[in-house]
Image 1: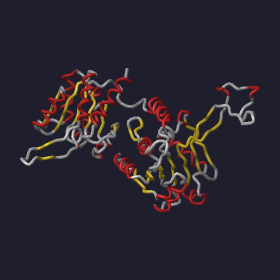
Image 2: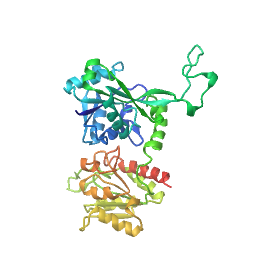
Image 3: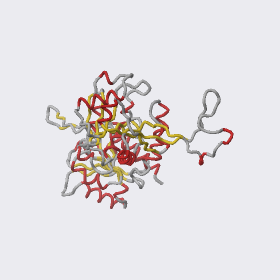
Image 4: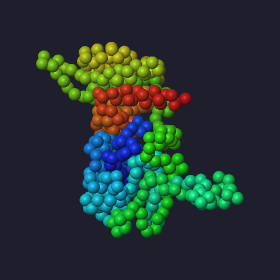
Length: 388
């Protein structure tokens, strides 16, 4: 029996346009649930069901190994379309075996963790279907002035009140066989996976976004690297500061396209007391001129028998800092060694798949040459402000 996760993500959203790929805590919203599912060992395949080319491009740019895109039919991507309609369409079009389990996941509930998915999948063995809920300790009333769930004459203390379970919409589990038979995400003996109360937030309105990001940073991203303040920023050139394109003039001169926003990012880092440097395998006067204009503290061009990690260690020795106090952004396989060792590592959205798979790496939204260094600089500065 395989476990297949399905994330519906259509184009249309009246309250927040293209909310499924809008930036949430530095990543497209849909990234967080996909990441959690990728890190859930019980999940075999992940499908994003969308009618949107932009969403498809963003999802595929993550380079996650278990994740694929399913192009849902327009008639099942309307405002009035039910989630069940796309589930049944997907099962039919992909000829999904009825012996499999389907994990329906909502992209608008980004605070779901791999542990939530794993616990739900373990629990489903005792029933037919399952949904996620949160316990709400609130006192409810009827319109006629009668209390609904407590005796107001004997008001209980909150800590003694059991409260009520509320569906938070994070995820549902059912067998494909049940879904096909009952045309519903839930059926038979229904079980509950109780989640933390802060996961009740759903991203349906703009104000929800502000609240959810604060909750995400407080409860989910608290263990996010780095643990120490960053004191040195290092970057690759081709594919990071540039778009990795090779441009030539009629005279055969090599040209590179840089982004002015990256220059401002390096300036902000310098102003915050963070040293900056460039490490590149090639040697060109063009990069030397750009480095001078950017006022970087260190420029290492050419291999000289050393890998990028060796160069970084050399700089660390000069600055009397450790590798855990440096940040590095790279996009190709010759960057992996240093990315794996750096205290805060990141890569552009169009980095090689092998780079995106580096443990603990931060996958940025922008591509190389499109301001990705500025994006990373902002994250570093925010991180330094959080670390004591």
